[in-house]
Amino acid sequence: MIETSKSRYQFAALERHSQALANETESKCAENRLAASNTISFLGSVFETVEQQPKSLFRNVRLMLIARFMNHLYSMFLLVERGLFLDAHACARAATESTAFYWMICIDQCYAEEYIKEQSPRPVEVRKELEKRGVDVKELKDIYSHQSEVVHVGNSSDQMQVRWHDLENGEIGIGGRSETELQRSAFNAIVASMVIFLRYDPDFKPVERSE
Image (cartoon, rainbow, N blue to C red):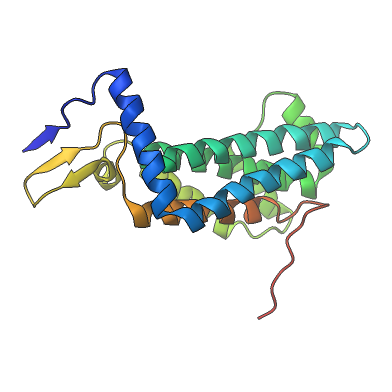
């Protein structure tokens, strides 16, 4: 039998619960949280650098996509901090979609025209276009597939919002719940997402490590 957590239904109570979780996360996941926050700050620096470049369609679309990606990661950060893991995965998946399109315009600047038309291809079509240009998208596809599996309703990932006391009894985590190792992993994923996003950036392409 699953019971709902009493006293968390009212908005004020949810807010208190959420802030308490954020404070707890800041204490228990300090190092990982700091790395993730520094990542978001770095993306802000990337945005400011591109903003100073001569105006062009390519520059403007880059700014739009960097802003979108940064907002996704910031939203993910806030949700992870508060133990809302399924919602954080939804933001991560949206960030991955932005990454694919960002790769596309960095590799082929003409593709910025597709963004302006406001009729951008579906994520799978963007990945196919990348493959046509010789880009290895396996990592991106694997990440997106995992994120989609978690986000879709009615699978084992729904258990992420339940704290099981034993095999038959659990508590639904209304408003989020603390899960330190999962939160540390999610903060690390924010850092990794930024590195992947900038892989084909003309100004901030990450340096590949030698084996």
